Length: 265
Ligand code: GLP
Image (tube, rainbow, N blue to C red):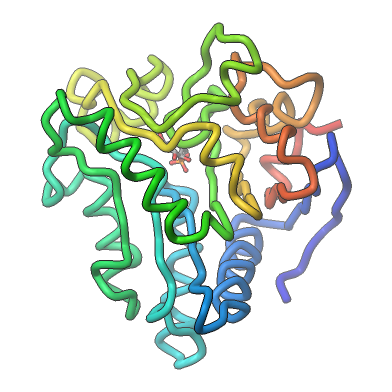
């Protein structure tokens, strides 16, 4: 088991602090592996996957477990949180391509069981595609586990800060959004300049994220400390989407390293 420094409760959620990003990521991978191992022939593991820099270590750990013969994804089904829009699946900056690079090509998940929102759907069909994506998840029995990262502005998936009421924010469906300026700034390196960042994206809605039976929020690095501290303190607010995880209470576990936990009082 990864070495945990400490754990505590905040707003009904569990916060587990690890000495470094590697240990926090191994804990996330271990939770995903246990979810897969707990699945039965009648109930496949339905996993919500995240992209970004943070979960790369989770995927490499899962790939190592698989390579060592200890874990098969044959009976798992994955649904990704988000995708740029519009984007071609073979564009190296697409999240479909990211998943291929970091996970799909390294494990035995059957291709038809790895779902990513489609960045090529014509704009007039986007709403129908997003609604269909949610229906597929429901038809599979709902997400057993949703892996999440956090944006520096507190976004989850691409659910960006807004001025909605909490009730409205909690009900947000899967949809097309516009990236927040800070999110574009953070994506600039990957795209080779802030002006080159694709300004819109498809994201699983807050409602679908919060419906997962288990939610793992992985946050590592000092640049996440402010957003982590704000999401764990005070009331839920749409201006800080990660604070909305409080609505799922005991189904939520934060896996953070010491650097990301440094602002939590
Ligand atoms: C990205 C993704 C999120 C991700 C977050 C943090 O924009 N849309 O799903 O969790 O921002 O990314 P990173 O892990 O690279 O800091």
